[in-house]
Image 1 (cartoon, rainbow over the protein chains, first blue to last red):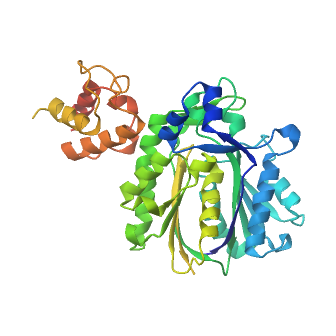
Image 2 (image 1 turned 180 degrees about the vertical axis):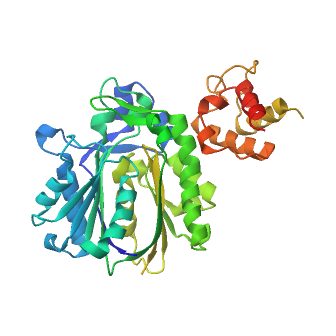
Image 3 (image 1 turned 60 degrees about the vertical axis):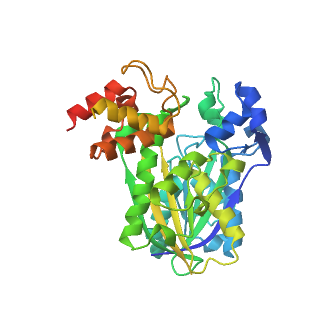
Length: 314
Length: 77
């Protein structure tokens, strides 16, 4: 198993509060908070003002490299997840690597997977690090461009924000050792959460919540049982920040105190595949040491794809 | 206790909203269920009826009325 060496994140400067969004969508600001736990989210500047998906990814990646104490020439691969890539191809990973200053020839891999993408990317990086060396994982999303597209569905538009998160997976050393992971998919629910080309975001919320409420705890408990960890052993659960109410449900189902679930959703909204690493970066920033800490990551999203990953601070 | 009475008891335990007069009425439209209390309903049914509902059966429409829930239970026992 490999090591997590550092995290990094980037959030755009523009803050959109519930009051601003509520007046635009014709709903109540307090209803937004009650339904989601969100009070504000960030919005990337419009493309004409040059804050692109790649620019956000580069900023998160650069922050991660700085925290890792590494230079671009020490990176052996970039794996990047996004569900909001601006093109069918190529994906944004190669352009991001280039703008980060990585030498030409370094392999990059796009994971076009909303929400659970960074969890899958971290698991891939864990397996590939022994061969490729330091792997930079980035999750980046420009969700407001999708969710606020007219005609906007208020039930969806209230949820999302823009941002990028990153982590560095190293083969030999870091701040936490990856213990294990489980990745799972079920294509029979493809239609319940999807974004067609040039279409609007479609989500069967009841199905998503119902499936996520069962599948995320099951994935976490599978790993806890495999490694004989109890829920009480876990110091922090770093989850895809989908909805505060869902995160609370997952903690309850696993038997974990709710204060163990680290949440940034109040300030960021749901930033899809970027969210788990944005939360991880903020959590790590608040710690003086990760030594001995048991960390659980978990995510669920369109596909459905879901999974969990355990790590132990060193 | 009949299946219907058990289902009504579960619903009353998870929602303060009055149950609809007719068992065919939508529990979502009546405000008895929302996305999150649906999770509680499924857990309550599993516990009360001693069954495990597979994830593949978790179509929210199957739990949208007392009548639908009764039908599901009768065809899965």
